[in-house]
Image 1 (spheres, rainbow, N blue to C red):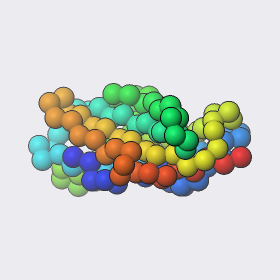
Image 2 (image 1 turned 120 degrees about the horizontal axis):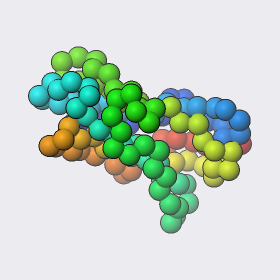
Image 3 (image 1 turned 180 degrees about the horizontal axis):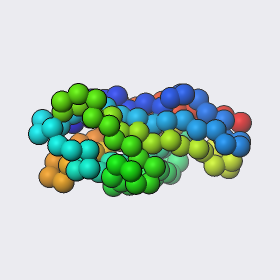
Length: 122
């Protein structure tokens, strides 16, 4: 499922005002299901030890909660979500998390694979 490809573009975003970064992940599904069958979760984990996890979207389908899922080839998909950090969001580098489910199988591209992928600045 996930290809260890969760990323933020741009990789650095200013927290003050309206500034967005797009979190995206490429995943595969051997059954080549329609995009509407998938549910995705994007989370970020803060820069300091013991920092809480921020759920950006949880179990969201294509077209809901700002999530877009696109089939890019047979059995290959990209899920994306535009994130605008709150003005009060902590400054630093964040780890990314992505999870996808097709209703019967789920897979995760976790924080360990995506350490310090998103920088939030003033």
